[in-house]
Length: 205
Image (cartoon, rainbow, N blue to C red):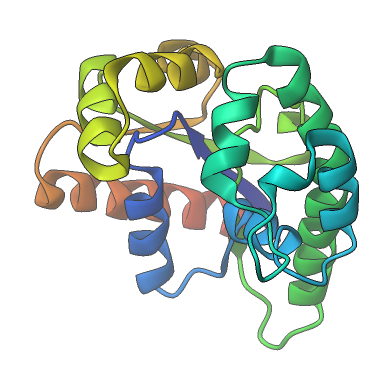
């Protein structure tokens, strides 16, 4: 089974692309969802996050306030690196377990896709057979963040600076899906990429 990573920049349309891939019957997993689980009340990561960033990042229910934490880590590269060191090993361990579990299922999937926003930043691209990058213009990223997340222009710019430029990620991709256009145009690209990877996976078997 081919291991495929989907990545991109913040607000580059990656979540939409993942949803379209999943709707076509491809097994998928979302690293952001795993991070969210790791920050809920009762998770062993929560006390470590609170110890590093202070009790002020906790909600009354004992979970981590992701917006408050985000404001801290996107403004401070060292804080961001510390958070990644706390969370990423567990996230990638769970992703590995997920891929391993799929191999035992019958019939086995030809390929599966893990959505990993910081794939290149964390230098995990070598763990995957193929990499898909969802791209759009930086101006569109800014617009989406400000509309979707209610960020100021300065906050949106800080989040863009915290990640690799989207054009750099695209240079290292096996496949690029451009989300600047309509949903229909993006869907067509998704279909094309799935067909290409399916053919690659069949040949490799």
